[in-house]
Amino acid sequence: MTERLWWTAGNGSVLALDSPYIVTGITGTGGGPAEVQTQRAPFQDGSTVRDELIKERSVTIELMILASSRQQLFVLRRALARALSPKLGAGTLSWTDPDDTEWRLDAVPEAVEFPGGDASGPTWQRAVVSLIAAEPCWYRPGTLQAASLAGGLGFPFQFPISFATVKSASLATNDGDVDAPVEITLVGPCLNPSATNLTTGKTMKVQYNVASGYSIYINTAFGAKEVSLVAPGGAKTNIMNYLTSNSEFWSLEPGNNELQFAEEGSNPSALMLVSWRNRYVGR
Image 1 (cartoon, one colour):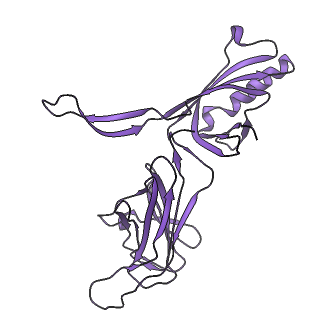
Image 2 (tube, rainbow, N blue to C red; image 1 turned 120 degrees about the vertical axis):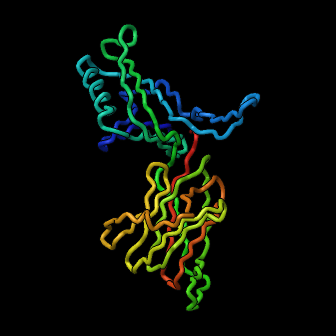
Image 3 (cartoon, rainbow, N blue to C red; image 1 turned 90 degrees about the horizontal axis):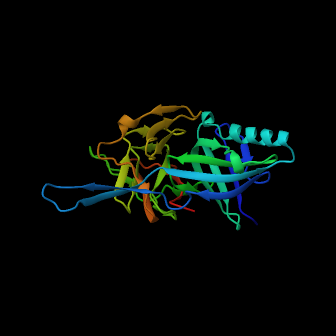
């Protein structure tokens, strides 16, 4: 197998970056630039590092367009500019290794330039494509999934307190380089369900009686956090206000993460599904 590179635009159209578009160079695909956040106290020499964040990624692709005629050259130029129009919104750059491993990066086209002078000829043209990836991490297609099934012990007491029925724990392995946000589905019937990452000690609990056929959907991604009740037909209702005050949106840290599902009933068909994408700082 050989390396392949292609662009999927925001409208779903696909442009293969191979003949007649020959990739001659690509930069910005390695480890993304970091932003080191520091804090300085009065009279302190230097500063204290508080966090390191990965900044948005800039990717530059250099191409050579090879045509059979002057007329075809302008057709190919136009097709490249149209596929990489910023007006189409965010698209996806896909890159496969010689072993057929596919990597993806979501990005927005910033510019497509066609230099003049000695960068063009009657039937050829050099082109420079610039992309901006607000989410700088690469990922692979598809999602990984872990499931926590019903099980464990129930507590049939009638006191004015409730005991959680602890369901089977699952091990989720994040093989990426950074924390991975998760999408969680808590399938009813279940009472006041909670999803916990025992490895990080963070839990999310929803004070809600989920009827049979309904489920709770949780997304922990930054900028897309969501807690919704999903009806049998798929309609969603925002129930973020039912999240307990001590709940924390959690992600999977790199490596093994032990997850646990609990609810305050004894519903054997209750189920937790957790899905995520491993994220990589470079490829």
